[in-house]
Amino acid sequence: MSGVLARRDRALTPEETEELLRDRLGDGVRNSLQEFGIFTVWIAQDSWSEAARRCRDEPLLAYDMFDHLTAVDAREHGFDVLVVLYSTSTGNRIVLRTRCEGGREAPTCPSITETYRGANWMEREAYDMFGIDFPGHPSLEPRLLTVENFEGYPLRKDFHLTSRAAKPWPGVAEPKELDEEGNVIEKEARIGDAPGPYELDKAMAEQAKLANPLPEPETVEGEIAEELAEDAQVAPDSGEVLAGTGEQAAETLEKQATEQAAADADAETQGSAQAARAKAEQRRQEQVAARARKAAERADPGSGGAAADGIDQETFDRLIAEGKSERIARSKAKAAYIKRQRAEQRAAEGEDDGGEQDA
Amino acid sequence: MGLMDQVELPQPVKYVFNWGRKYSLWCFNFGLACCAIEFIAASTSRHDFIRHGVIPFAHGPRQADLLVVSGTLTDKMAPAVKRLYEEMPEPKYVISFGSCANCGGPYWDSYSVTKGVDQIIPVDVYVPGCPPRPEALLDGIIALQDRIQHESLKDRIAGRRLDPVTLGADAPLALEGR
Ligand code: SF4
Image (cartoon, rainbow over all chains, first blue to last red; front, side, top):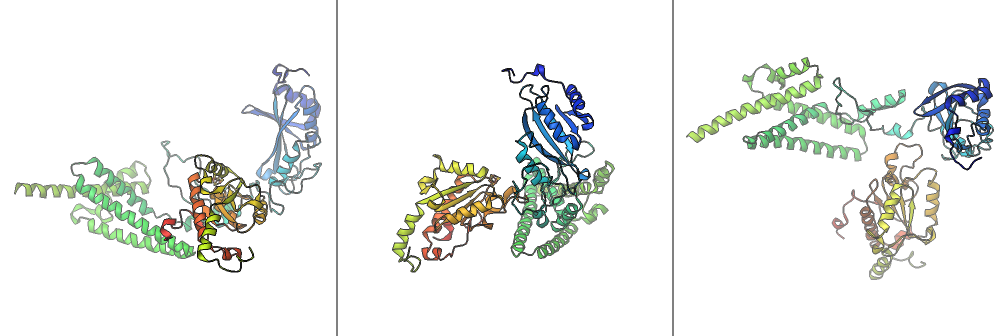
């Protein structure tokens, strides 16, 4: 062997490699694919050890460095084992991949520790994480990465995380959801938004959603408060009046939120989620009632039918016609309605002021 | 120790004794993950917890008074921590440094991570954060020293411990009226 490390000029192309392997292993080579610059050869289970040996010993291939061995959960097809080999003389890298026999119940794959001794602990890891048996391996037990009496195989897709049975995963789905125009839908992360692929996960997520309700009207109110605050900023001349009311609204909202949070915390420390839920429900109802009352007070009997439920019917209809969701349309319409009311109020006060000044 | 576990020391003696103890904490760092780096930062010249009388790098658990568990404790590692703790001589103290050591942290749902070091050994001070800043460790050390100063050694030897302190969650030291 020459002193040059990676002689790429001597390296076989993937096609040649496959041809050579086919020549040596016959039907042992199932097919091959090349993606992301990685050359993968699917090997039949029977030829697995033979393929590894050929890869190392064929002078043209000379994959003398064992890089990695791992497994993949192939769902209903069972498990795949794949091994990454590198040739220090040609600089080639190859992935050999095989499907385990025995399906999901008792997957087995011949060991390649005879050929590559470095595969020893990697196969133990695959055994720990996927429960794949490697006949010919010196000793898969004791378990390498998990505690000795560990039940199950944690990297299998159907492995259940016990912690999540008690408390669901609070994350959200990635990548972000897009609306029809391709804008990212800004959603507040909500517990139970991203269930796992299995039925139990979904059921747990549903339960979690029920246990952590997100009171919808509150966000609407929040939006209105925000818009009011914005309004207060863009209209500096009438700023005082408006900022006053806007701040007040924001303050009451904030107070409500903190009170609720405090009450929630109390309830939680008492350790009864049930009671907390009931309380939250009750509080929400109270809030809804209070809001309805307020809306009724605000509603000017002279300003038309839309005032009854406190939304600007025109805006609402327009937004619905534009294809917005009802929730968004309602919130926007409500904001528009309140804005209009404020404007009317302002106008009225302006008149009063003018009158006083004249007098 | 023959006498100390029998009788309560008189107040002045106790004061001096505890004062001596709290400023010579030999500390054993059980660094398990990223938080260990913050511990190391706390021990170096900028934050320098030696000026608080914490002496890092005890030669072994048998020479240590304080165990700082910093990092992600796995079920596989748990027996080692337990054994180490048991090798330490009484009176011994434990600071749980970082969310992982407190409760499992970001790995709360992992199949392999212990949900907090307090599942296997008693903890005196919890320092929250992922990772906590070195200042937080200094805070934790001061909280611990405060507790050593006011502690009855007799009770400690008899295994009666005060409730653990959680930095940030419990009242600041200044408000406890000491
Ligand atoms: S708490 Fe955060 S920083 Fe500390 S060990 Fe855990 S993951 Fe790392």
